[in-house]
Image (cartoon, rainbow, N blue to C red; front, side, top):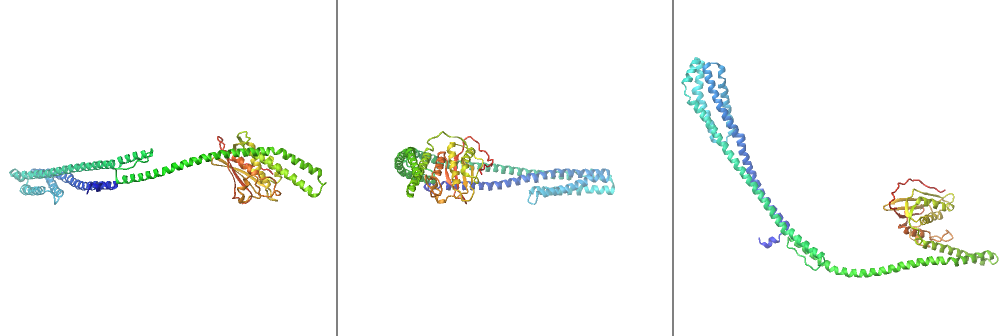
Length: 531
């Protein structure tokens, strides 16, 4: 495999290859360690579960043989059957202990231990055949004196050989124990070596991974970030490259492509910004001209309406004087013409008065104060009491305190409630309700009635100055009321709109900013009624 092909490997592929290699090595080490540990456990089991109990059995076996010899001598001296108990107990213990050693050694156990065990069994049988059984028979048949004579005449070589064979058995068991201990120590050393080797493999893999990440990720990412910062600082002509992994080289190529696109679009943006700045300058000039024009128009409307008052009053006065003095003295057509002139002058006077009032909104101000809308509605109720009549019902819930000009807010409610009284349905008592609710950072107020209502197609037209939806002879007024309402609401920073989702009557919503620093009171749900 060439170096070039290795450089083409992705970071993911390199990390996977390293991980697989380390995992394979650790797996082999783990299998070998498991086998070694099993072997060590087997040797430890031999020491703890086999050689230990066998050594203990060997020591007990020596005691059992001595007990047999002691029992025989005691029985030969006294002839008492009770003195024969040590012999019987020792014989039983001998057989049990030899069987235990055979069991612990097992069929696949140490051959030397097996041979020594068999030798002990044979010499024990010989001692009993040569010494113990003849003494027992002599005592039973001839008495203690015959038994003692046999004991004194007997040779101790048989018993000494038996004890020597037991010593050889214990020595063979000790050899097996020492061999198991050495083997367990050796396997323990191998396990430690395997652990050290595994730790070295892990440390080496970590070092390789660290170097791999440092060379292919960390340093290339730092270099790439420095290049990107240079481009971000304005060096849009700098070519972005990377010497890292294929992923980073691809990323660098993508970033460089983005840089080229940004650089290409930046010139277009600069040109567009210059055009936008020029357009903004033109719009600013036009806005200033429009503001000046609106101010001049408002001033013109105010001056025109104010200056037209005097000549219009003269025209209206002389028309009325002419009507009073010559009414009935001329023909019917002349009286009709005079009546038209008087009515036109009066309507013109009302229009000019309304225009003057409209132009004064926001021009003559005493500043905002805390306005209690409950008190405003009480004043509005008083002003409209004559127009309301005996059957009208005007109710409102507990209204908030807002910041504004009380005269303008009074005018606002006079126009809204006055319209509700004006546009009532025939033979139906007017019912007008004013409510308020807190929505976000503003109060939302609603004036609703059960009158003739407004068609949806006229939702925007009703707030335009001097716009009428009915003939002059059907309802009085100049059509400026809702325009004044809208200007007052906007002067206070609010919005106004017509609610089109009502089954009958008219519902108008408008907003007023929340009064800063005054907590919102829970509505007491008390109504004021005008009957």
